[in-house]
Length: 197
Length: 244
Picture (cartoon, chains in turn blue, orange):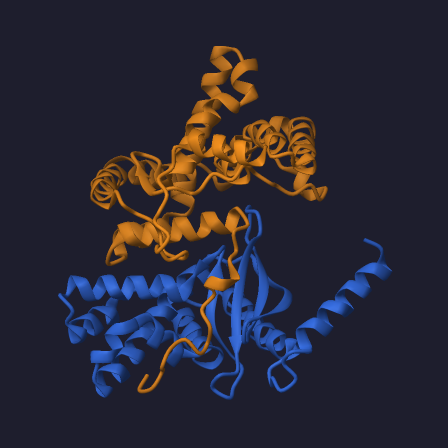
């Protein structure tokens, strides 16, 4: 594709993307800058050479700052949230935050010696998909997508796709299985969650 | 013609098709009971044999050598990928696989190194499961295969057919063919060791390792085949977050 055609193509797609949603606050640049910041922080942590435990603490801080934790927790609990009390929901969100920080922190730790690169942004439904490439030592690069929304009034990511694997869906299945194992007892599941991940 | 081909692919793959009410994003798993038994067998095999072998392998073999074994095994897969891309009428894919194979065999010391990637000819693997997908065969039911792990009917048929689509299988003398098979198995053991943390976390730390494996395999495979269905993306308005 020549430069002119490519530019025309990009120009026209941008027009199509913007036209139907004139009032939408979050835009490509903002979604991208959120993920730029996030990727920068992850890269800093994995380059820091810190101990495993202090890295998880850092990843938890990054999750709290960059992700929509109440959405991720609510989605993971799914329909069982209907019978959860207010205090169970609060306790679940707190335990779940530590759990995903450890679980996904472990995956990010495997990026040591590698790097994440932001590739591009695309609008999907009411949110933005920011594609990054993970370059790991001795491996073919793979896709890591962040789904960004301003639902809360802040730009935050609410879902992540690692090589096509959807975090929200995978965690809903896992939390469902943890509940099944405890015969549906929410408090017992929350207690298990504190040491899981 | 298309109908005939699609019909042929369907018959060939012999896949079970879910009913019209089955949600697209959900994995179709009518053989769950049997699959779970196979899963328990695979888990027992892993903890008794594969995992210890893999741990030993990464402990003894220097990382550089393990990576070379992996690259050598990957390169042996290029001819199969080329044949499959040909069957998919993907000419650039065929060219890519053949140039990678030639470049890596010659400049990469028989395939121990991957100079093709450095030259910008990045990997693009294929298999007969993908060919069936391109021909229009449905994914079929989820199956967990003994030793091989998560799969589906279409990919299981693909694995059997790929035993015959490998040109090296016809070209190499028996001894060299056996060495090639040995290298491929060693490379799989190496992968188990290299990705030990993530595999362990799925197999031994998740609440339902069968369900996690089923879900992750299916999502990843659909992504590899380019079935990225944006309709299945979860929207930020889908859930009531009150109280969380």
